[in-house]
Length: 172
Image 1: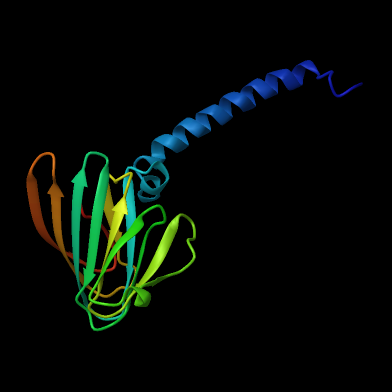
Image 2: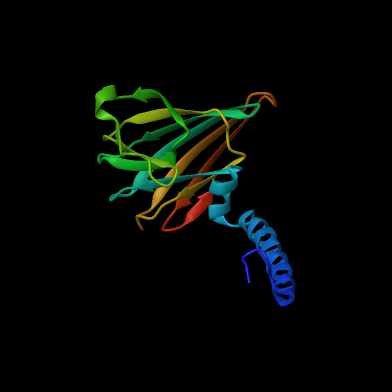
């Protein structure tokens, strides 16, 4: 018997296996659309993680135009904080500190982890701007987020203050 000759029973099983595989892919993609991780994989939601030790007041300003966005993040804390953003976001500007003091770790799993000194901020350009941002606070210490969202084409500005404890919240 050669490798090219497949028994009839294998043909039936391979059709069932193929059908099962297709269903698995369909259900996986469908469930990813509703999961937090799915936003990262499908790029309609951007995840941002913030690491800090003390209670934190964070300022986040998002300007959206068409499919791109500028995301400004400023920390009012006395401590260095770390933020993880999608690795395809480009650092645009640094505030209240020399540019050499803003460092980043090697991108991992599609994210870049930036180290922000006390009372400093950064601005990122997201060419493929997200439809929404999910902010994660794994530190277990409260964080107040002062959010400003600007829709340039719609000429609207929304302001919101969100208290985040040890969970994740959708900013917009």
